[in-house]
Amino acid sequence: MSVKKIGIASLLAMFAALVVPGLAGAAPVEEEVFLAKALELDMVWVALATVLVFFMQAGFMFLEIGFSRMKNAGTGVAKILVNLGIVTIAWWAIGYGIGGFGDGSLAKYIGTDGFFFHFDQDILGTAATADTAMLMLFGLAFCAVSLAIVWGTTLERIKFSAYVVFAFIFGALIYPIVAHSVWGGGLLSDVGGKPVMDFAGSSVVHLTGATAGLACLLLLGARKGKYAADGSPRAIPGHSMPLVGLGIMILWIGWFGFNGGSTFVTEGSFFGEVMLNTQLAAAAGVLGASLLVYIKTKALDVGMAGNGAIAGLVGITAGCGFVEYWAAPIIGFLAGLLVVGCVLLFEKYLDDPIGALSAHGAAGIWGTLAVGIFGSPRLVLDGAGAGLWYGIFGDASFSSALGQFGVQTLAVVGTFVFVLAASYAVFAILKATIGIRVSEAEEDAGLDISSHGMYGYPEAFIPQPELPVGEYTPSMAGTPIATASDATPNQA
Image (cartoon, rainbow, N blue to C red; front, side, top):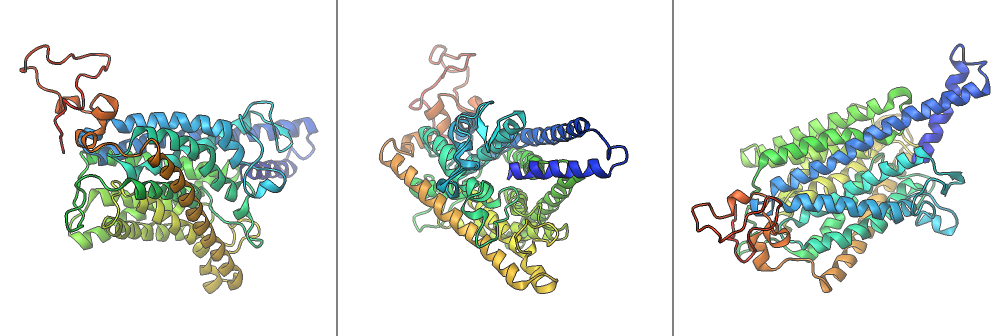
C-alpha cells in the first residue's frame, strides 16, 4: 500500500510540473529536484504521523491503568515498555518482511523481502532508502497499536512472561500475515477482482488485536470475584476515571496520525479530509454511547462515553479515506450504540475489564462493513465497488456494490478466523508450558507487588512510619520494600 501511494505522489508531482507555469520547460534535473522535494515533504508528514501513532501507547497505558485497581496500576507501565521493545525487534527482524510485498507463489500468503531491514537491502528491485525506512517505522507503529489492544482483556491476572512470548510471535507472524493479506498484495487485496478496502485498519489493526485478546481471555478466565455464585457479573471498578479520560484523549489525538498518516502524501491535502472524517466519527461515537447508556441506566457512565469515542474512531478507521463527510458521523454514532450494547452483553459471559472486545472488535467489524455500505464512488480504490447506499439510492451498480460488501464481509470473517485460531494455539501452548495466569495469592496481592516487587501507589500499601523502624528497608532506587507475602490485599 505504501509503495503504491508513493508512486501516485510521484505521478502527481510530474503532472504538476507540466502544468504549472514556469515548470513546463524545466530541465530534467530541475524536475528531479522538484520530485525529490515533494517526496521529502511527504515523508515529513509520515514522520509526524508516526510520532502521533507511537504516542498512542501512552493512551493505552493510562486507559488500562485507570480501569485497573490500585494494586495493579504499576504493571501497566512495565507492560507497555517491554511490549513496545519486543515488538520493535520482532517487526524489524521478521514482521516487516512478512507484512510487505513478495515474489513467487508465497506472495499471496506472506511477504518475502525486507527481513532484518537495512539500508542497502533490495526491496521491490530498489535499494532501501531513508523514505522506505520511514514507511517501515510507520508500519511498526501500527503493529504496536494492534498488540496493545490484545492485553486489554487480560488485566489483573495474566503472567508477565506470557506478554513477552506472545508479543514476539504476534509482531513477527500473526499481525504481519493479516497486514500482508490486505495491504501487501496478499489474498484479500484481490477477491474476484475487487480489493478489500480498509484505509487504516479497522480489521487489520483493531479486529486483529481484539480477536487475539479474545483467544487469550477464553483460556485465561475471569478475575477472581467477577462473577457471583449464580453467574451474574459483579462490577470491579477501576481506580481512576481521570486516567481513563486522559488515555482516551491521547488516543483520540494520536488517531489523527493513525488515519491521516495513512494517506502517505501531502499532495492535495487529502489527509485533511481523512482527519475531518475521523473527528466527526469520534464525536458522534461519544454522543451515541452516552445517549444509549443514559437510556438504559439513567446515568451518564464515564467509561461508556470514553468507549464510545474509541468505538467511533475504530469504526471510521477503515472508511476514513473512502466515505464522504456526511457518512462519518453516521458510522461513528452507530459504533457508539454498538459498543454499549456489546459491553453489556459480553460482560455476562466474558471478563473484559476495558471493553476491548467491544470497542476494537465489534466496532472494527462494523467499520469494515460500513465501507461496503457508504463507500463513495469518487473515493473507492481502483476496481472496487461503491457502497450499497450508492447502489440503492445513487447511480452506482447495485451488483458491484453488493459484491464489494461481500468482499468486506469476507475480510472480517477471514481475519477473525485466522487470528483466533493462531492466537488460541499460541496461548494454549503457553498455558500448557509456562502458564498464563498468576496464582490466586498473587492475584489477591496484586500484580504490582507479586510481579514487579513495587506498588504503583506505594503510599496506599506500605506501612506508615509509626511502625517499628527497621522492619522495612526503603530504597530511593526502587528496590522492593515489601514482598507479596508481606502485602495486605487491597481491593481498592
